[in-house]
Image (cartoon, rainbow, N blue to C red; front, top):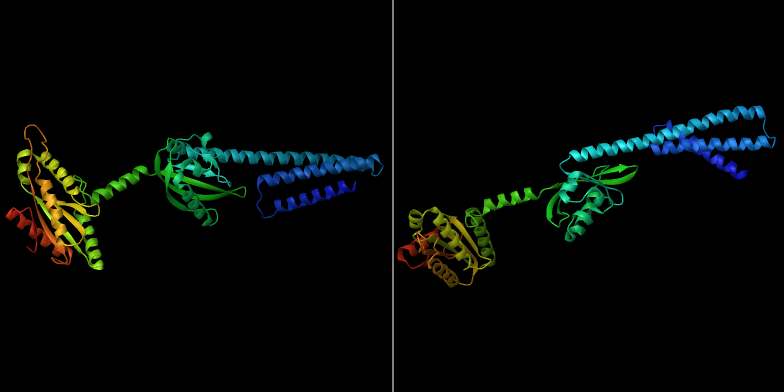
Length: 392
């Protein structure tokens, strides 16, 4: 009997606490209020059992028992109905929230992925299926990094996700990360993750809005390439050439070594354009660029300055004779007959003239070196020697 009294005392205390919280400014979840009402119902039922015990042993007035028992029965019924109503409301709100999330997720063009507090996928919309190739049932319960991140980048993904989460202020993480992604078919893509956090039933959930930016990155790379490289030959253009030459001069000044600038012009190229057409001329330029590239080192720069003019930067030479050797190889390569581009016009014979300027002997800045190399190139063209130094 003492044990029953203790249980009833504890239940009464819980019921009073719940009633007090319900009328206070403290916000309670529907689950808590539902359990408080259910506890109250069980408490009343326990008191009814105690009264039945007392009436059977002559410890209570029958008339009082009947009145109290009726009121307790009514209270029990009301508390049970209230508890069931509250829990039904909780389930209804959850279903409504999930339905709204699904509607929003279906309309979104970006992938919306929600992970629970254990890091497992709890929500996966149609856009996520379209981007990554996994259906919702395949994705649910999986770890995000194991599903959509290439194996080589998974450690970095987890680290950056933890870093973003540790910087959370309140409910928002507010971090945007650009990461490698992996489709179900094994294709690697580039993804942009907008990460936020939300507390659901006092448990932290992470929401990732993921966008496939592969095409955008390709377009950006294409724009960067067009800004720095010649569209016909694929060589660095005039702007990138000046940047490379400036860096080479600065490095040569610091390390006190020589560098060479070769400025070359194709001979008889105008005649090719006039008699064979621009298609033949473009083919000659592309072939010439490839031939020049074969004569230099990977550390050297070959650029198309404009028209039929090319430049070569040899960033480090032991002596001017090194530049002369390279210039000679280039002249020989461009003197060789170019392959026929059509049966009507046959083979093409052009040749080239190369001017050589050496830093710091012929100039200590870009303007002086370019002027010296250009002057040497015209000297070689007039003499027919193939190549010439500025100082000759």
